[in-house]
Image (cartoon, rainbow, N blue to C red; front, side):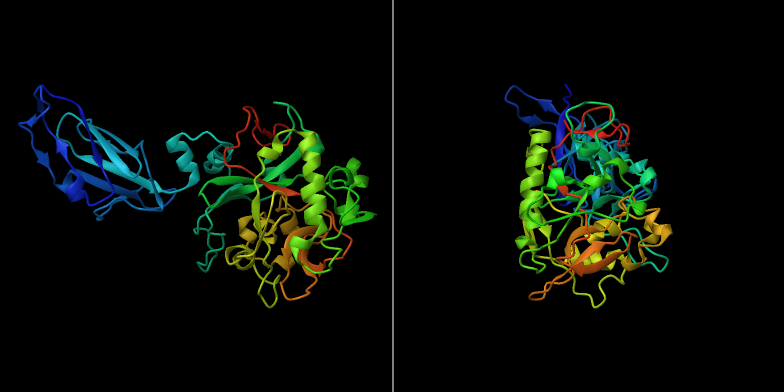
Length: 429
């Protein structure tokens, strides 16, 4: 009789690994008789996607599976005579009753495709699945370039929201309801998806509106004054009087974030306690994160495009503060504008054409987590000015509002029904 068997084709040399058995007769002692193995690598073709969004594939001449940068496509992979292909742990499994010729397709890797092809259930996947239909969510994999061909995306395999606020559906509500509108205090927005050291995606959130005195407290780095320039403010006008100013560091007067009262008291004590009381259990979803605190090594740090600043601020930075709550990076803000403007200097972000197309711009003086440099006793940090540009100021400057930011763990899931709009935000299970 003929038996159906499963052959494992590992990631080694295909010419040695491919064994498609045409027929097999099993005796009572399970000895294999009258069988033969075909070890001709022409029995299988590796088909590689030419470009990320292309329908074109080309046959690879390699003798092993692609080791990185690709993902197995279970929908296109097939065999001419009906054998079944599957992929697990970098091995192809062939279930067959006859000799066959098989085609194994690999797409350019993206997390969105991994979610789709492996049917992963997570909040990060819910967001990434919108990648192919949401033009506001951009995948930073080193393919977005300027007219001269220079790469201008972060090239860190992140997904980031970019564009005007009304076109970016990235709202998350942390209350316990399953549907409906969200109170301003509970409303956040997704900066993007970022890979951690375990190669898993975390969801980075930022407070949708500026935090209030009730949330941050009146101790620590509290400046005790209501913020100003309300004509530019884009948040809840009825809540404006509760938004107070805070210092970046009013104790040691240097730009060491680890010593900052804003970091230790207002964000990681007061605000964290407030959010625990507001939504018990949410703190279990907020990761301890290594917040980069390098500053920059650029002569004129803000007269550069965001890509150059990102490399200095994040990519080449080895110094960090490990906490649950932080603030936005300069590069978070820089990449929130339309990609067509990523070559603009950060100091020029005051232009209306940019503020109108940057969902993170909120119209008040605002602190970032990023020092300007880390020279001894330096007192300069980067802030977002009320008109929208990025500039430097002193750590004891008292004009600034605060929007807390944090990373949700990779296993965070969303309740069904939310689609990221302000009226129907995502909600955390």
